[in-house]
Length: 394
Image 1 (cartoon, rainbow, N blue to C red):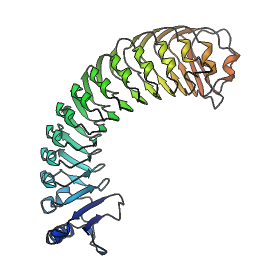
Image 2 (cartoon, rainbow, N blue to C red):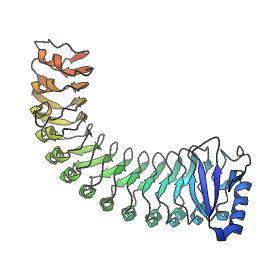
Image 3 (spheres, helix red, strand yellow):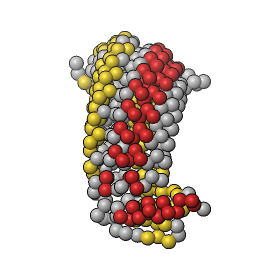
Image 4 (tube, rainbow, N blue to C red):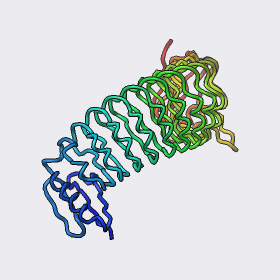
């Protein structure tokens, strides 16, 4: 049976390193165990644990651990371990490493290019540190990578086009950095992606049409960037998508009618852009939608009746909880079909040019716990017993 060496942190139960040594490598194993002990970790060797205090190591520099002496290490799992300093270049010597988690520490400096030599790595999480510099292009050599999270750092530069070579990637999170440039079209080659988060950066240019090739995507967040141009019609091909957030960009043009084909969509946020034209009636086909935010755009026309219409055989938008169409140029009357949305908790139609009458029909709205209606209207009749009704005067 193979010997198992585990570095355990009793203070942080999730911080575990595993070192697996083959039976023929007993001498090497003992040498590596000594290296672990000398670094101040708790070490378990077989059934007989040998422990040493780790207080002096926790909160210290990461390069205190001599990675060159640990070539058989397969897992490093050290989130919230109060680590500081840089990620040492010697980490590239850990050729057997399959998991590397150093999230939520105080690591600084650049991601070493040597990290690209970790060809067996399947999970890499360096999120929530203070890492700087660009994402190394060498990351493309990590062909077995399934999960890559570099979010919440201070990374700069463009997203490397080489990222498109990570064909096994299912989750990519580069959010909350200072990345610039365009979203590379090569991202469309990541056919196994289920989650993509590039939000809260300084990305520019158009949303690449190739994003429509990510047929397995369930989560897409490109919000809080400086993206321009129209929403590509190809986005309608993402039939498995449940969450779509393109808010707080500078997107223009109309909302594509193809969005009505995204039948699994639960949350749709296109707010705070410069979208124009009418709200497409095809949105009424999104029967699983619970949150719809189209606020702070330049949308015109009337509110389509399909937003509130609930045919017995389809139940369009019957799951809707939040409807925010505020701060647009919508006109006409409030469609009475909105009153049939029994699960609705908030409707915000404020700062538009909507007119008409709120009647007793709205008294039945939101039977599960109605919270508030915010309107910008000129209404002669108000007979609606809701918990909160806010009327903004023009």
